[in-house]
Image: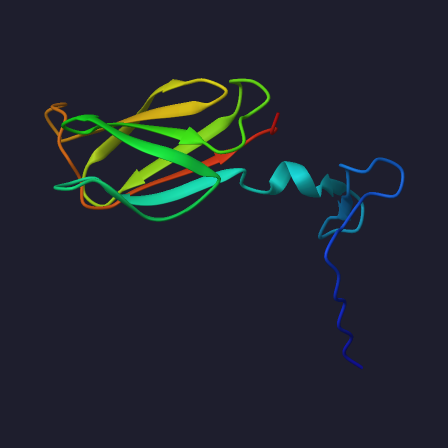
Length: 128
C-alpha cells in the first residue's frame, strides 16, 4: 500500500530546527538539516558571466579572468563551512570564504587564471 505525505512545514518535535533521520543500518541517525546544501549555483564563467540556476544566491561578481565572488541571500553562521567547486575543463580553487561570500578561481594547467563556460559551487554548513 503506497502512502503520500503532503505538508508545507517539517519541524522537529523536541527541537524545531533538528530532525533526525535513521541511517541505512538502522543503528545511527543523521541530522537532516546538516545534510542539505545551503547554497548551490551553476553559472557561465566566460564571456558575459551569468547565473544559469542557483539556490540562495544573492549575487555573482566577475572580478576578472577566472575570478568570481558569489554572495548569499541568507548568510552562513560562520566561515567554517564546506564549499566545493567544479568546472567543465579547468582546475578550480576556493580562494576565500566569509559568512556572506565565497570566492572561486578557475585556472588552466599552468596555474594561470582562465574563464570556464560551466562553473558549479555547492556549500554545506550552518545558516545564520
